[in-house]
Length: 314
Image (cartoon, rainbow, N blue to C red; front, side):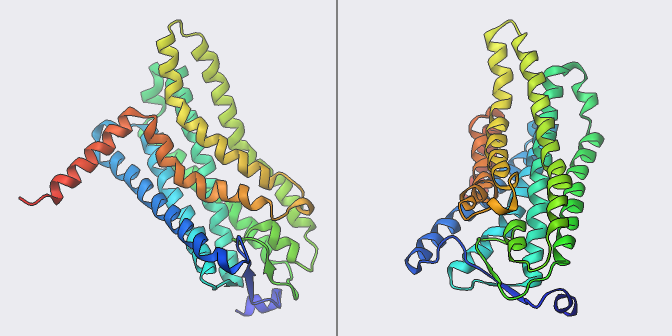
């Protein structure tokens, strides 16, 4: 706590949440509790199905299981705190706020890099299928996952340390449902010039690089697929990418809307876009990947079937 007092006279923040109307709190609590439980259940089922079915022991599902695990952690960083705020506990400590922000950026960017790795996997599978097994071997897959997790944590640590050097004087009301860089910087009574420069330079590179990798991968995939003579072959190739493209569109569309804009233009309207990439995408991922994937649907049926047979009395 000594460090907090040296850098800031504010010891806690007030998260206003999604609505200040008392009559909205219970419906919002029920809605987000339901979404949270669906997110946890859906992603756990994906992980269990992948790890229990030998047919799903491939790089694509290896990456998907890590994406599901990250989504569980990502949502858990945000939603339980939201639920508390609906029950009138709107204050969060200075250290708690910075901790939440750290994990939001670390896990959110891990999601981003895993989506890029999954696009790379589809690129190799479709554009260079004869070398797929050797290119996407287990050792390389582990290294890609390790990189996807470690770089976002370093990025998040940088921005958390830069935010911690700011001074917060009197205003401690955050017009948001989570501790995010932009609303926190707007509360600071010291210069945020360095923070904004780092966000627009390093932050943009970290955010845009995986998106460019995804774009490059899918341009190459599109060129390759268009050369396939049969319509059935084209459909099969596109079917393996459709789910991933849907998730990428939801995730990056909302992130770019929120973060690739000047600090001065940040308003409460960005809450909806923030909800899309923090809560909605994590909840929809299991449905998007399973509904359009026969192998995963079969794996889920096997998993549920085994659980029913184990639960049935002998």
